[in-house]
Image (cartoon, rainbow, N blue to C red; front, side):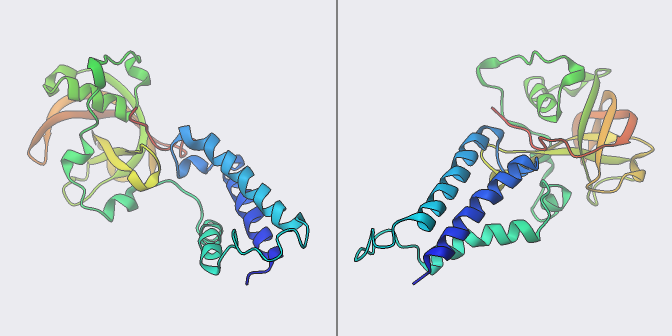
Length: 239
Protein backbone atom coordinates (compact mmCIF):
# COMPACT_ATOMS: atom_id res chain seq x y z
CA UNK A 1 0.00 0.00 0.00
CA UNK A 2 1.30 3.44 -0.94
CA UNK A 3 2.02 5.71 2.04
CA UNK A 4 -0.34 8.68 2.26
CA UNK A 5 2.58 11.11 2.38
CA UNK A 6 3.88 9.75 -0.96
CA UNK A 7 0.49 10.18 -2.60
CA UNK A 8 0.28 13.71 -1.29
CA UNK A 9 3.73 14.73 -2.52
CA UNK A 10 3.24 13.26 -5.99
CA UNK A 11 -0.14 14.89 -6.56
CA UNK A 12 1.07 18.27 -5.30
CA UNK A 13 4.17 17.92 -7.49
CA UNK A 14 1.94 17.32 -10.52
CA UNK A 15 -0.06 20.44 -9.79
CA UNK A 16 3.08 22.52 -9.33
CA UNK A 17 4.56 21.08 -12.52
CA UNK A 18 1.52 22.20 -14.55
CA UNK A 19 1.74 25.65 -12.95
CA UNK A 20 5.44 25.87 -13.81
CA UNK A 21 4.68 25.19 -17.48
CA UNK A 22 2.04 27.92 -17.47
CA UNK A 23 4.13 30.59 -15.75
CA UNK A 24 7.23 29.54 -17.69
CA UNK A 25 5.43 30.27 -20.94
CA UNK A 26 5.78 26.74 -22.35
CA UNK A 27 2.30 25.31 -21.77
CA UNK A 28 1.34 26.25 -25.34
CA UNK A 29 4.10 23.96 -26.60
CA UNK A 30 1.76 21.09 -25.72
CA UNK A 31 -1.89 22.16 -25.97
CA UNK A 32 -4.33 24.42 -27.77
CA UNK A 33 -4.66 27.82 -26.11
CA UNK A 34 -8.36 27.26 -25.40
CA UNK A 35 -7.47 24.49 -22.93
CA UNK A 36 -5.13 26.61 -20.79
CA UNK A 37 -7.80 27.48 -18.23
CA UNK A 38 -8.86 23.84 -17.94
CA UNK A 39 -5.23 22.89 -17.35
CA UNK A 40 -4.96 25.47 -14.57
CA UNK A 41 -8.11 24.04 -12.99
CA UNK A 42 -6.52 20.59 -13.21
CA UNK A 43 -3.39 21.93 -11.48
CA UNK A 44 -5.52 23.30 -8.65
CA UNK A 45 -7.35 19.97 -8.45
CA UNK A 46 -4.11 18.00 -8.11
CA UNK A 47 -2.91 20.29 -5.33
CA UNK A 48 -6.24 20.14 -3.45
CA UNK A 49 -6.37 16.34 -3.67
CA UNK A 50 -2.73 16.13 -2.59
CA UNK A 51 -3.38 18.35 0.41
CA UNK A 52 -6.46 16.32 1.29
CA UNK A 53 -4.27 13.21 1.51
CA UNK A 54 -1.74 15.09 3.61
CA UNK A 55 -4.10 16.67 6.10
CA UNK A 56 -7.06 14.30 6.30
CA UNK A 57 -7.88 12.85 9.71
CA UNK A 58 -5.87 9.66 10.30
CA UNK A 59 -8.90 7.46 11.07
CA UNK A 60 -11.45 9.23 8.93
CA UNK A 61 -11.52 6.43 6.34
CA UNK A 62 -10.43 3.49 8.43
CA UNK A 63 -11.74 0.24 7.03
CA UNK A 64 -12.52 1.71 3.60
CA UNK A 65 -10.52 0.81 0.48
CA UNK A 66 -12.27 2.93 -2.12
CA UNK A 67 -10.27 5.80 -3.57
CA UNK A 68 -6.88 4.19 -2.91
CA UNK A 69 -4.23 5.14 -5.47
CA UNK A 70 -2.44 2.09 -6.85
CA UNK A 71 1.24 1.90 -7.77
CA UNK A 72 0.22 1.82 -11.44
CA UNK A 73 -1.85 4.95 -10.97
CA UNK A 74 1.02 6.61 -9.16
CA UNK A 75 3.36 5.76 -12.04
CA UNK A 76 0.94 7.38 -14.52
CA UNK A 77 1.05 10.60 -12.51
CA UNK A 78 4.82 10.53 -11.96
CA UNK A 79 5.85 9.73 -15.56
CA UNK A 80 4.95 13.11 -17.17
CA UNK A 81 6.64 14.95 -14.29
CA UNK A 82 9.87 13.02 -14.79
CA UNK A 83 9.79 13.36 -18.58
CA UNK A 84 8.98 17.05 -18.31
CA UNK A 85 11.97 17.66 -16.04
CA UNK A 86 14.40 15.53 -18.08
CA UNK A 87 13.40 16.71 -21.58
CA UNK A 88 13.66 20.48 -22.20
CA UNK A 89 10.30 21.90 -23.32
CA UNK A 90 10.13 22.90 -26.97
CA UNK A 91 7.44 22.90 -29.65
CA UNK A 92 7.27 20.43 -32.51
CA UNK A 93 9.59 21.26 -35.37
CA UNK A 94 11.31 19.79 -38.39
CA UNK A 95 12.45 16.75 -36.40
CA UNK A 96 8.80 15.78 -35.82
CA UNK A 97 8.18 16.06 -39.57
CA UNK A 98 11.17 13.87 -40.41
CA UNK A 99 9.66 11.06 -38.31
CA UNK A 100 6.55 10.84 -40.48
CA UNK A 101 5.69 10.48 -44.14
CA UNK A 102 5.45 14.13 -45.17
CA UNK A 103 3.69 14.58 -48.48
CA UNK A 104 3.66 17.83 -50.38
CA UNK A 105 -0.13 17.88 -50.16
CA UNK A 106 0.01 17.84 -46.36
CA UNK A 107 2.34 20.84 -46.31
CA UNK A 108 0.47 22.92 -48.85
CA UNK A 109 -3.10 22.31 -47.76
CA UNK A 110 -5.21 23.64 -44.92
CA UNK A 111 -8.77 23.11 -43.66
CA UNK A 112 -11.36 24.57 -45.99
CA UNK A 113 -12.77 27.87 -44.68
CA UNK A 114 -16.30 27.27 -43.39
CA UNK A 115 -19.33 29.21 -44.63
CA UNK A 116 -17.32 30.84 -47.41
CA UNK A 117 -15.49 32.99 -44.89
CA UNK A 118 -13.36 35.66 -46.53
CA UNK A 119 -10.22 36.44 -44.57
CA UNK A 120 -10.31 39.99 -43.26
CA UNK A 121 -6.72 40.22 -42.03
CA UNK A 122 -4.45 42.64 -43.86
CA UNK A 123 -2.06 40.64 -46.03
CA UNK A 124 0.93 41.83 -44.01
CA UNK A 125 -0.56 40.27 -40.85
CA UNK A 126 -1.50 36.87 -42.25
CA UNK A 127 0.24 33.79 -40.93
CA UNK A 128 0.98 30.58 -42.83
CA UNK A 129 -2.44 29.09 -42.08
CA UNK A 130 -4.22 32.27 -43.26
CA UNK A 131 -2.38 32.11 -46.57
CA UNK A 132 -3.09 28.42 -47.01
CA UNK A 133 -6.81 29.03 -46.49
CA UNK A 134 -6.62 31.83 -49.05
CA UNK A 135 -4.90 29.48 -51.51
CA UNK A 136 -7.70 26.96 -50.95
CA UNK A 137 -10.34 29.52 -51.91
CA UNK A 138 -8.39 30.56 -55.05
CA UNK A 139 -6.79 27.46 -56.57
CA UNK A 140 -5.21 29.42 -59.46
CA UNK A 141 -1.69 30.23 -58.13
CA UNK A 142 -1.27 33.16 -60.54
CA UNK A 143 -3.96 35.06 -58.60
CA UNK A 144 -1.36 35.71 -55.88
CA UNK A 145 1.42 36.98 -58.14
CA UNK A 146 3.01 40.07 -56.60
CA UNK A 147 1.14 39.85 -53.30
CA UNK A 148 3.38 40.63 -50.34
CA UNK A 149 3.63 38.32 -47.33
CA UNK A 150 5.51 38.32 -44.04
CA UNK A 151 5.40 35.08 -42.06
CA UNK A 152 7.22 33.29 -39.26
CA UNK A 153 7.93 29.56 -39.13
CA UNK A 154 10.67 26.98 -38.96
CA UNK A 155 12.77 25.78 -41.87
CA UNK A 156 11.86 22.38 -43.31
CA UNK A 157 13.59 20.69 -46.22
CA UNK A 158 14.19 17.20 -47.54
CA UNK A 159 15.84 15.72 -50.62
CA UNK A 160 13.24 17.28 -52.92
CA UNK A 161 14.44 20.81 -52.16
CA UNK A 162 17.17 22.65 -54.06
CA UNK A 163 19.85 24.69 -52.29
CA UNK A 164 17.83 27.89 -52.71
CA UNK A 165 14.56 26.40 -51.41
CA UNK A 166 12.88 25.46 -48.16
CA UNK A 167 9.42 25.31 -46.65
CA UNK A 168 8.64 27.86 -43.94
CA UNK A 169 6.45 25.67 -41.76
CA UNK A 170 4.21 25.57 -38.70
CA UNK A 171 2.08 22.91 -37.07
CA UNK A 172 -1.67 23.29 -36.67
CA UNK A 173 -3.34 21.67 -33.67
CA UNK A 174 -6.96 21.19 -32.69
CA UNK A 175 -6.47 19.79 -29.18
CA UNK A 176 -2.83 19.09 -28.38
CA UNK A 177 0.52 18.26 -29.95
CA UNK A 178 -0.63 14.66 -30.46
CA UNK A 179 -2.98 15.73 -33.29
CA UNK A 180 -0.54 18.23 -34.86
CA UNK A 181 -0.47 18.55 -38.66
CA UNK A 182 2.27 20.38 -40.58
CA UNK A 183 1.64 23.07 -43.17
CA UNK A 184 4.00 25.42 -44.93
CA UNK A 185 4.77 27.93 -47.68
CA UNK A 186 7.36 27.28 -50.35
CA UNK A 187 10.25 29.79 -50.15
CA UNK A 188 12.96 30.58 -52.67
CA UNK A 189 15.98 32.74 -51.95
CA UNK A 190 19.70 32.72 -52.70
CA UNK A 191 20.20 32.97 -48.93
CA UNK A 192 18.11 29.87 -48.16
CA UNK A 193 21.20 27.67 -47.74
CA UNK A 194 22.37 29.87 -44.85
CA UNK A 195 19.48 28.75 -42.65
CA UNK A 196 19.63 25.23 -41.21
CA UNK A 197 16.65 22.93 -40.96
CA UNK A 198 14.53 23.64 -37.85
CA UNK A 199 15.76 27.25 -37.57
CA UNK A 200 12.89 29.63 -36.86
CA UNK A 201 12.89 32.44 -39.42
CA UNK A 202 10.96 35.49 -40.48
CA UNK A 203 10.35 35.57 -44.22
CA UNK A 204 9.21 38.60 -46.17
CA UNK A 205 8.68 38.68 -49.91
CA UNK A 206 6.23 38.41 -52.80
CA UNK A 207 4.41 35.42 -54.24
CA UNK A 208 5.03 34.21 -57.78
CA UNK A 209 3.38 31.19 -59.36
CA UNK A 210 5.86 28.37 -59.90
CA UNK A 211 6.44 24.65 -59.69
CA UNK A 212 7.76 22.42 -56.95
CA UNK A 213 7.85 18.64 -57.14
CA UNK A 214 5.71 18.81 -60.27
CA UNK A 215 2.93 20.84 -58.70
CA UNK A 216 1.89 24.42 -59.48
CA UNK A 217 1.73 26.62 -56.40
CA UNK A 218 2.38 30.15 -55.14
CA UNK A 219 6.05 30.43 -54.19
CA UNK A 220 7.26 33.09 -51.78
CA UNK A 221 10.25 34.84 -53.36
CA UNK A 222 12.03 36.16 -50.28
CA UNK A 223 13.37 39.70 -50.10
CA UNK A 224 14.21 39.29 -46.43
CA UNK A 225 15.25 36.22 -44.45
CA UNK A 226 16.12 36.63 -40.79
CA UNK A 227 16.43 34.28 -37.80
CA UNK A 228 13.83 34.80 -35.09
CA UNK A 229 12.83 33.43 -31.71
CA UNK A 230 10.19 30.75 -31.26
CA UNK A 231 6.88 32.62 -30.84
CA UNK A 232 4.90 32.36 -27.61
CA UNK A 233 2.22 30.52 -29.59
CA UNK A 234 4.22 28.23 -31.87
CA UNK A 235 1.16 26.42 -33.22
CA UNK A 236 -1.68 27.68 -35.40
CA UNK A 237 -5.31 26.86 -34.67
CA UNK A 238 -7.75 25.94 -37.49
CA UNK A 239 -10.96 27.23 -35.92
